[in-house]
Amino acid sequence: MAATERLYLNSIESGYFTDFSAVVTAVQDDTIVLDRTLFYPLGGGQNWDTGTISGPNGTVAVEEVRGRNEIFHSVGDDHQFSVGDEIHGSVDWQRRHAHMRMHTAQHLVSGVVYESFNGTRTVGNQIHNDRSRIDFNPISFTPEMLEEITRQVNELIDANHPVTDSTMTREEVNSEMPPERTNMDLLPPSVKELRVVKIGDNLDLCPCAGTHVGQLGEIGHIEITGKKSKGKGTQRITYELHIPEITTNPSSKLL
Image 1 (spheres, rainbow, N blue to C red):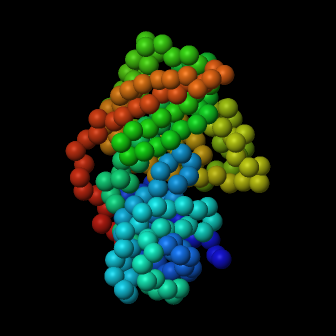
Image 2 (cartoon, one colour):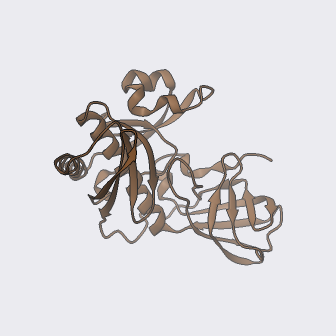
Image 3 (tube, rainbow, N blue to C red):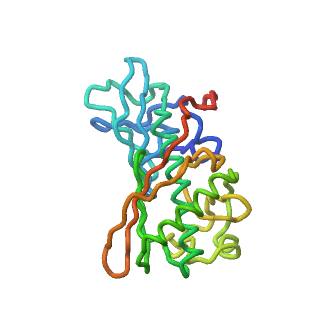
């Protein structure tokens, strides 16, 4: 089975697109595979997109999206799709944009913690639309440290730095950022070229296949809502966003 083309990876701007056309390439019970998709699958700590897919026999809800090479869209047992069907997909914009804001905020928090507290590494994260978490090691956060992280991150957001992406080799990334900061050791050695997300003028630079906002001002201010120990020097912080009132997608393009 051929890999699904991930349209949201074309550029940062592609994260703002919600509508696309595609062809069904496989059907497996309650899931379908498409030749191309804008739906983000679970991965990299980021939750999946939801939305709808319309075809010759009507419209169904996309309940879950998973996969690495072939992307499986869960659409229910009575979907009536067949291989070769031409479809129209539409991503839920409110959920997508929440993930974009949350994921870019995670990059900011991880970068601030690394720079402020002796190279503390991000060792895990989970991005949801209403809340998110990051695991750090080695660290033991005090209330004052959390206040300082919040202050620095919100100042960066207020400065409204641009967010861009590009393709770089492992060597190019390592020449600009310490491998410990970018968690380069977690990437398979076989991966030579990386999609890299950059904030401002190297405020942060990190290999990432997630969706992100194009300007930090879209994030809204961050609020750290809790912390807990995860053992062996690891602490988890949870955060929410005071999100701006953005209700419409600024992009009307169809992919």
